[in-house]
Length: 126
Image (cartoon, one colour):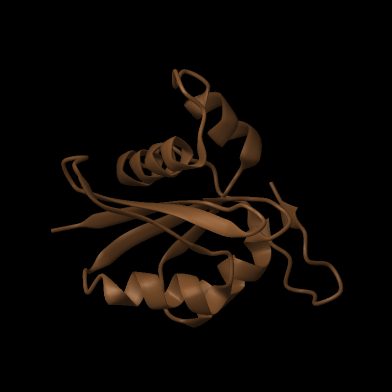
């Protein structure tokens, strides 16, 4: 079965949500916004993760690069597109944002950003 992960990145902790191909929530969690913590949590799932998504932001490029290097199929999402897609949610929270991003990954309703490859320029280009 295919599994999709949505990550809502915040300064101290990131909210994660894993959904299956039918959209059912399999697991949720909150871990430190550090590459090692996120990678350990994802590997601890012992699931075949089809796609992982996180919204572009100041910390996202750092986490994106580390997860890519660890071998995960991760996507950096265009912020305005994610914001528009999640705007209809009745309650705005990190947990709900992670759920929404996971569903966007499952459905393929997202626009990719390209993380800059130059070390001195760590911005996303959408």
